[in-house]
Image: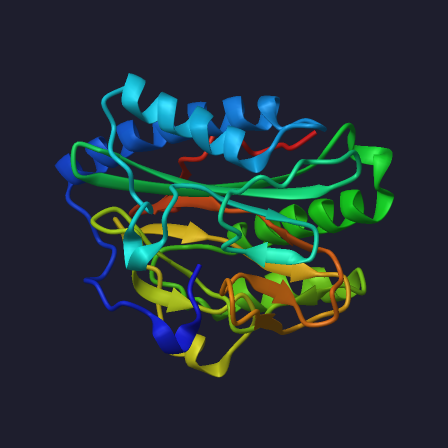
Length: 265
């Protein structure tokens, strides 16, 4: 995820067969790490403990950090709680029952990047019914958007479908936060909105693109703000925010889902 005005421009996300094979290996490790983190995310656990678990996993499997020190960011995980939508740096915050936690993670296998994010409610999903509904709608919107994808089709239908699904549930899309390519770097072109922006009619899915789709939603806010002392991104009205992210490979006929964590309950 990146704000559209401040994107680092890297080459388009089209990959060779050899590159795709290596990125699959990176995905495999990342999905395993996310499953571990989701299991360990419980009440009375500090966010920094989850960061240490990720660090141990990466060292144990001879992987490399992807996000740590990227643009100065000091950790590999973004662990954002409740009204913080993205870029909360893991610290000594203690998770509580009913918290809505977003886990956004990256790893590098050899030199190939993978990126995915999940969301969960601490304790159990119905401990916070509003958070449960927001996560469910966010993931449903992502699934519905992905169902529209075809090679050589414009990206507009994806964005329009995602936003329509979210708004039908009376929730909001954070409009300036985008999805992106990945593989050679943390963020690559294209950088595309999660709603039907007119410019998306001129952007097309192409075979062998590796893309990270990640709608970021909120209960009432369609914008965010950043505190000057930490640069974390919060919902405009301090309401709950959610995120879910898949990595996909666009093929010659359709697409291949690379993320294993397609369910959250």
